[in-house]
Image (cartoon, rainbow, N blue to C red; front, side, top):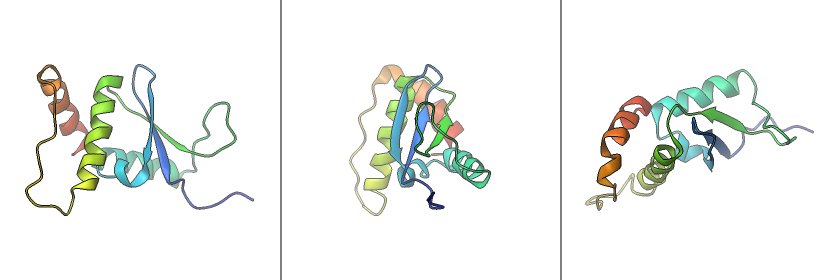
Length: 108
């Protein structure tokens, strides 16, 4: 019997084909991803290829390296959301500009 509850996890798929399975709660830290997930689940969950398990898959218009760092930040933000004096997250200087553009796009 299919469950009407959305999956606890979502799959973010980068534009170069890398897949990142993360907690729905972490993904929803990013406003744009939250809206993408809401639009997909309101029209019915997407089926992942070669699997009967229902998951929400969201295509992300960024490279795998950027999506990986984005998912790290989403978990980092979730972990420290109620904390004060949070240490800075390590970001490689070579990725700063791309991450800034992605952060703006994803509303984080």
